[in-house]
Length: 208
View 1 (cartoon, rainbow, N blue to C red):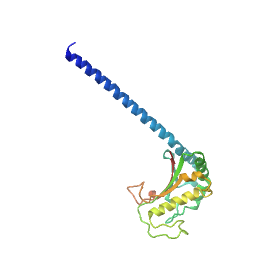
View 2 (cartoon, helix red, strand yellow):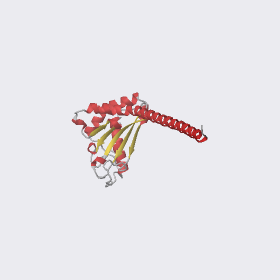
View 3 (cartoon, rainbow, N blue to C red):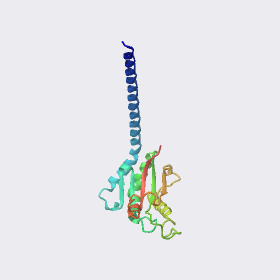
View 4 (cartoon, rainbow, N blue to C red):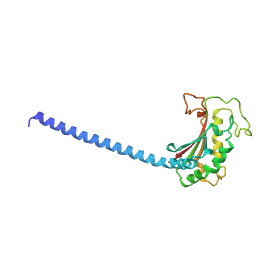
């Protein structure tokens, strides 16, 4: 064997070894990523299932008008029409619906699944609050800007869902949070004053 042929053979061998190692590395990464995706899907299943149960219950019921269910995202959306204009007060019909139809399922799921949490998020459009509301008598919550208005609406939704719950004894209430985003998270960006942006979202999350 010529010396040049010898080195060519060694080079080919090394290239083959490197190729195998690279292939093994890629396969390992794909396996890890696949396992992570499967684990995340499993984590999100609880959130999706509770929204699907509520969605199934609402089927063809006109009382749920103004409430949208997104089971794939673990999300329930209350439209602006669910609230009294210019206030944080939730409409009486929607309040009764949350208390009598939706609350039982949500409480049961939170009680049974210790990894399930709820974040109730208030959102507004970009139009500033016209005047401060210092008293909660007529508006259900004091507010002077879109952040405090959105937080007030989110609290009203939480109160409607859990009005009969004793927070001191229901440990799962620690997994229920409220936040007001104001106009920071518009869903109709092209029309920032759209009523679509004025909403409360009940977001089910999985806690590690």
